[in-house]
Every structure is written in structure tokens, then in C-alpha cells.
Image 1 (cartoon, rainbow, N blue to C red):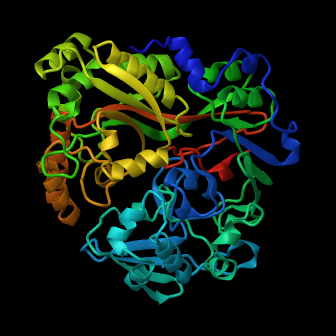
Image 2: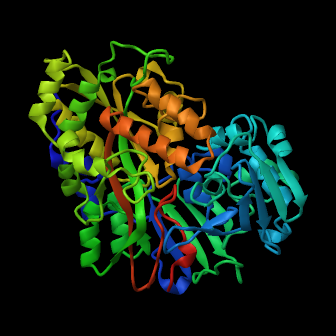
Image 3: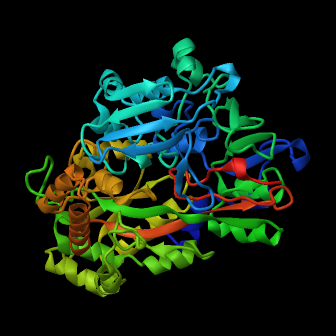
Length: 552
């Protein structure tokens, strides 16, 4: 039996103690706007890296998007895809051949010359090399080739400012793949890669050369990153002379930095925002839902898939329904997200404003997924588990969601209340992704939390709801979902794609394939005396972005 008070859950997850609250230590000299340096305090990334393909998309987007840019940019106010290093892109009608026209005259930092088609080829090729761990390496291999040499052959260079991608299969969401929302395909200088090599880029005093509005200066491992503004940048020249990202693992310390004016923007959990607001700080909320939170149930596989085991309790749809009905979603919102803006997630991979949304999911959500511990207990008994069974709830630390551990612990309490024998276990995000890709039996009967960036439905289905090698996580209760996805991935017909998307969504919803939880908008607290205005879209892998748009 788990015995964790709500107060202890929250304090433990936020890293609070009486010592931290009464006298948070200073992390550096006090800074004011007169220095021209914008200091932003964020939770630490799961991996520190200067190379895009050496970290997951959330980590690379958080750290490198300031100095590197993608072919397609993201508008700060709306989150829409807009021209970036590419001025335009178009497909030939088959969703396999994409012609991209590059912007002329864009210069790399430090005198490394003009951005050209050669840089595109090299960056896309290296993202598929052995050892690449970025979230989208598998997807890119399935589209352009399994090796860097294959990728180079499938990207045709027409001239210095025109490339043609010859995909191996139709992919209507390829513009999203090329965009700054993902974090995988930001453009390193090809000349730096050739001249200095990746080892030099990893050097904390050298770092990557890009074309972004900020130029990389240095990294203090485990502590911070420093950038300087690029004057007369082609896209957006920052107001501030420098940008410093400070990585702060303890939320109480981050709050103190905001109170003491040691940081001008702080990404504290919502529970710590009120005291900052009382001191005159302002909350900036992302334009779009930033982070989807859902749990997968390890072992939800159909007969014939590797590691399928009929004896795993969560294979039974009644057990999955019981787990969903046991979770008090509204209670989680009230406890941890009282500042508002949070929406219930009703079907993982689908958005209420998206083209493939079925209003039936809204209409039936309360009757099928609503909080009902009594019904949950009855379902367990019907499934043959009147006395419960052993279940693990994973806790995974995510920079973009400081409340993640608290959510896992609260769900563990909910499930204990219906008679399950629950154990909490901590995982690293990279480890749990690798285990999920491998369909590792160690994840059977493990509820794993996932943060989902606001991606096109097809990309989310590819990652979470199909058994192919390019899927990261699999929730496959029936073969029909897998078959429909394979048809979907090969189709460029709009009507057929819509029908398949909706069919997959209906199956997922009716069979309780996952534990969908929340859509959460990103929020950051700023000092209005230093940062008068700041806008960010939120619906990117890193959540926090566009610091070049922060205004004095």
C-alpha cells in the first residue's frame, strides 16, 4: 500500500524543503537589465548536448534552437509553420517528391560562409548515422535511407539554393519534419563539421556554428549556456545583448532566483507561481497547448507481436478501462494546475480542433472514462482480479513538466485505492524510450508517463500506435489498428487518410488503448521591469522558445 500525503507528494516533486524555502542559495551574481543579459532559469535537459542528433528532440530544441535554425520556422504568436531557411516548399502531388527553395544570403556565425544546399544534405545525412539518438532518427531513416550515404543519394541538389527530397514513401507531414517544432533538423554549419569535426562542437568553449539570432558562446556543464546576439539578424534581432540559460534542478531555488532578481524569466511549477506574482512578476502563457500528458500501459500488444503475453493483466480491455476510471483527472487539475488553461486529453494523438476529431469522443468521455472507483473495482473483478495485481507506475523527470513526478504519485494513490498493489519506480526518459522501442518485457504492467508535443496526428500515431521499427512506443491492443496505420502511411489520398485516421481513433478510444490525461499550456514567469513582453507558441518539443522575441 502506498502512503503518500498530497502535501508530501507536491513538496517532494518540487524539491522543496523548509531550508530551501527560507533561504534559497544564490547561483551567481545578481543581475539587472543594465547588463544587457537576459537570464532564463529552466529545468535541466535530460541530456546536455551541442550536437542535434546526440540528444532527444526536447533536449536539443531547448538548448540549440537559439543558435541553429531549421528550414521551416515557427511563428511565435500562433505556432504556424512559416518560411525559415527555406523560402518555399512544394510536393509533386505524390507526397514523395519535395522541392525546397532555400533563402539566399543567410550567413553562418564566425565567418563560416553562406548557408547552402550542401549544409542541408550533410545535416540530414548525419542524423541517420549509427549512434544517432535523436527522437526522429528512425522516422528519417524510413523516409530517406538507413545510412548517411543512402540519405545523400536521396537528396538531389539542383543548385546552391534548391534541393529535392526523394522520399521512399509518401509523407504529407514532411514540412513538419523539416520545421523548428521538432528539434531534430536544425542546421549546423557543414564547413564547421568538415573542418573542426564533431569533437570540437562538443567542446563547451567552441560549440556549434549556426545561423540563428543568438551565437553560441560557451557552456558551463551542468549549470548554464551563454549566447550573444547576432546584430542585424535576417529574421529577428534580439533586444538583449546576451542570453543565458541557467539549468536549475530545484524548483524552490528557481523561485528564489525570480524573487531575488537573479533570473528575469523562471519556468517554475504552477504551485510556486503565486508568490512570484505577489512580488510583481507576470505570467506569460503559451499561445497553444504545449504539452500532452498520457500514460501507456506496458504489454498492451496483440497476439503475434514480439513479447505478447496473454497473462499480462493490461492486455484485458476491462483492466485498461478500470485503470482509466480509477484516475481522478479533475482532481489532478485542481491540485497542480490551478492557474488554468488545462484541457482534458480525450484521445491520445488527436486534437479537439484537428481535422480528424470525432465529437463522439467528447460526448462519451464522461460515461466511458469518468472518475468512478466503484466501477473500476467491479471491472477488475469481472476481469478476474478481485484482489488486484502488482502494477508499477513510472516517474520520469521532464523539464517541460515540473509536476510530472507529482502526477505519477497521485495516479499511484488512485490505483492503490481500487485495490492494485502499486510500486513507484524512477526511470530516465532515454532509457524508457529505448525499452519501449524494444518492447522490453520489463515494461509489462508498467504505466509510463509521456510528454507529447503538439504534432500532426500521423506523427503521433507513428510514434505511439504502430508496431513498426520507426515507432517509439507501442499501444497495440488489436491488429486492426496496425493494419490501418500501414494503409495510412502509404496513402496520399485525402479521403482515405481521413477515414483511416478516424477508424484508428475510434478503436483507440473504445478499447482504452492508453491512459490519456491532459493538454497543458506552457507558462513562464517574467520580471516585467526587465522583460516587458514575451510571446512563445508552446507547441514545440522544448515548450520554451523564441527568446529573441523577449522585449525590454
